[in-house]
Image (cartoon, rainbow, N blue to C red):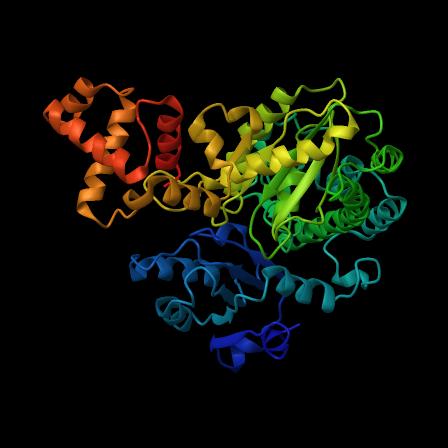
Length: 516
């Protein structure tokens, strides 16, 4: 395959930014994706280089682009495919550097994934993994035959990985999830904690197994020590692992269908699902004997399945707990729910603690999309799972109502129903439009904070309630005379129709202030 062949494929939508006939007729031997500032030591002659340009910033000088392209030329790269997503286009300074060094440069539109380009080179040119001519492979023929057999037999990922790297001298190797969970490791690889694994996912010696998967569902091939092997060989190993991954995803899809049936019974509009039907649905999901149950609901971006992938990845960190994950009938877009069977393995507190500790790492895998979650209290019997789902959704609303400090953006958060121990926390679980309506009606004219006089009265009311109705302490905090405080509070009472000598009226106005 030659560089010009890629330009002819309408499905990729590539645009030639610079390249003459000699550059476009170069033969492609492989593909390497990189965002290193100096990728030269990881490249092989004849390779196509994919880069999202994360290493470059508009404030950088021309020399940075010059060094990057010079490294490509020295390594013998045939072309640079630059992604448009990071900067909204390809910087002109990079195009000029490619022109000077004689490297063809093509832009990759946002809608084209790097995986699509890799598939075009490795799969379209050479055919399916088990049918390519031997001369087109980097992996030895005997290794390919063994791996194809293991895939057909549905072997476990540990065995598949161990056999895939055995001919490289059996180096330590891992397959890691997006959050650093070890999916597979070779016998020479020491156990890796999830935190260490999360760091390894971003290491230069780590290769994405399935780049087109959601950020939460990706697998990564990690070799802690560099090996003297062509990158194409590692890509072929990654493709073998990707085939295993796709088989696992098909099983997960089937399981999510059974979970959807269970959640439909729990989310029924009637008072309760028939116990027999609920029991059969739990049994189909493998949860019949795992009570008590905890329900967790997660919400991410409305137009994709990222929340389900994020929740699945999080729950895999609870190895002793079975779960059924799907989407209830009344779920909002971008929402996913799971019923966790804790049995005797974990308490509800332990589940919440484990998932809360994981949440920042999970969120970091797609930092642009806030990820919120709510956890119920344990449901002792299947019959109260409907109430547990309501609790999880209330906690989810509370989690998504919190704002990041200093901004109006929602703060990614996982909230357990047990966390709602204050009036402020409790109110955050009420939908925003309901809170706003309550605040407006309870405060009456004072809700119009565009009026300077009303803003002054609101401030006095807030301080008065914060000081437990003490006239003297309120006056001291506001630097006012006590008589002025009395006058302002009387005005508040008149405008709101409340008597601030009464506890219930104080609570009403305190709640109204918190709902603003």
